Length: 522
Image 1 (cartoon, one colour):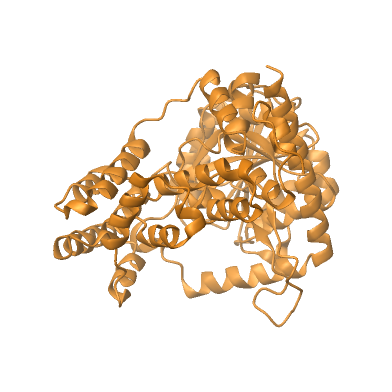
Image 2 (image 1 turned 90 degrees about the vertical axis):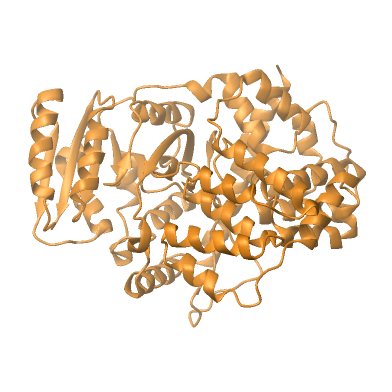
């Protein structure tokens, strides 16, 4: 094995062991993922990979400043601990000594399960006052406060009295919170390029640097043809109204809108009648079409119903939107830029973030994940276990996923198809109704025919969700989701998924190397 050259990110990449290269091409974020990266580096025994392991550990510690379990794990691992400087080890020791998981976490879990933020705040505030020397409670507060977008709660908890030995960990937590809640400015192309050269193993940095330097990050382009934007809705009049207002405020040159009312019994009909007038006043007559059904036929069938309309098929592109999203004005031009860069893709999607708290990423670039040691067994709850990577869920949005590249699946919340490809691959699986997994299953069909999706991370769409106790999942919803996941896994053989995953990894590697070589050439 050749030793990677530090002066060439592409050469460094080519010199990596296969298993480590597979991990690193997915990204350089996420607790469990970075632990895997560090472990893979250390197992090789290669000195040239020590900086990779060290960077993974530094990133882990910085992003999880109050995780006493992680601190204990790192301190108890001699290979990992030797990579940490004395000050870091001292800080981790103070954290580990002042972090204790409750023997009985029932009361905490019950409180979190209510999804009642005020109740959770009161619970954690009391826990911190009762046990000021136990940083476990402050870790929970940092996590909950970040998800609920409440920096005042976080800083109040972090600045409460604590033993002196815990101060380094709390200082690091304050720095992490400041980094999360300080308005983010996009770094310059020069800054990203220099950072990617210092850490050639960091695929997120390399992809962002490429896009910044090449102009991809700021690119916008009209779609090369007429576009049908399709929505379907059931009893979400307020959310649909806001979504359509957001859509109307965007650039809709060459766009016709079709909305299917899936048997709603609320004021959805009134909203659509009002929006029909507003669209006609703004865009002209005939650009906004309403389809009303007497019953709710489910999301997959609604998508297929819209696709079957001749006036929809007459367009070169079809874009499906959820009825509870907020769109930036240039959203379609951002997707147009993705089409321009990757015209061969089967579908183009975007980054989706939580409407109430954009720090929380709901969907980014996802890649196929399958354990070759597993096998198909219809008697199990997961009869053919495979899934998608979840690095975006392991972290908060600080820009790491602001890039454009191929992937295995994009969210159905906002995804664009070339009409001919969508008709060729068939509609959405109605057996996965009412809504779970039909978009993922369709993307898997695209992967199996080597028409891979493309993720446009320079477009962020905000997606609303229910809050408070209303967001609890009912047993019926949970059962339906599990049932649909089971059905989806039986629709594809293990060999088909494995072949698609291998082909996707080859595509990802080629895409990453091409971009690294471009950076090398500068």
